[in-house]
Amino acid sequence: MNVRLYVWQRLTAALMVPLVLGHFAVIFYATQKGLTAADILARTRGSVAWALFYGVFVLTVAVHAPIGVRTVLAEWTPLGSRSRDIAVVLFGLLLAVLGFRAIAAVVLA
Amino acid sequence: MPETLLVSLWRGGSDGRYVSYDVPMRENQTVLDVVTWVQRNADSTLSYRFACRVGMCGSCAMTVNGRPRWTCRTHVSKVASNGRITIGPLENLPIIKDLAADMRPFFEKWQQAKGRFAPSKARTDPIERIAPDSPARVAADAAIECINCGICYAACDTVRWNSDYLGPAALNRAWTLVNDVRDAANVERLTAVAANGGCHACHSHQSCQEHCPVSLNPTRSIAGLKRRTAQAYLRGEIKP
Image (cartoon, rainbow over all chains, first blue to last red; front, side):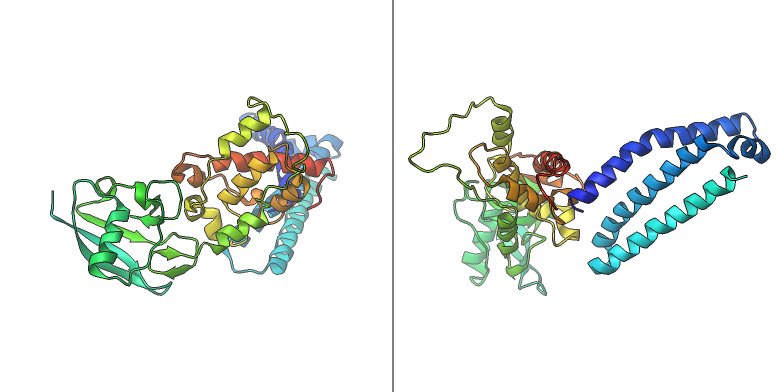
């Protein structure tokens, strides 16, 4: 960990606080109201707002999580610094791909 | 009170083992007294390190029943359990022999963290006036009583896991100098502590604060460095 990664990790953490709360609110709303998959898709398809909300969420996760995993790998595995950094960049890309794929599935008509 | 104490001492290098000795128990006895008794009466080849015996020099730190402690300031009655006591060298440092740990990595990291005062004035310049109640001086004063005993370094989980980590003592020292308005090397110092293995590697477990014999709080100093380096980085004053 160095100051550059530290600033990115704290910045994305600060962004995620409202996003996580919003995500929980969506989950509680959808389950309390008993929304069906069709009800949810009707609200999300073609919605720029939902695409932006979850798009930013996926980006922050894809930056935040690999920085933490990098520290775990550094302290708990014998991986060299280069292979560790490659592994966490791939992990971040995987999170971004999975996240954007999920967003595309509910936002694109 | 039993008449003897069963003392297990680490003998040898990193491949050594604990060896037990019977040591006469006294009413007032420090752990350092026990170690000294063994060396003078049971085995003169026992290696250990001490100097002042009064908690000022910081050279007699060892692992006592699993905790890093100043042996000169630790009474046997406080730590002995059922008449037994186990004493080893400080952890997280190479073992030279027996109870003597190699302090070189500790002091090398002190230098890496730019723990040396860099004067900004010559002796002909007027003396800098520093208000004792200024925030920077208060922050420096709170951290300045470190005597380099290495106990925080031996207690730190992050040091154990990350061999590059500078450790609590070196970072605490850097924090006192960052708050010293007379110092001229703070860009270099902040750059050094903002790199990999610097202050941002700290997980704030606070073992340093828990074990520090002079009740310093290196975790707070490191948190201060994290803030200060982040500000300097965002302003473009340092480049990691």
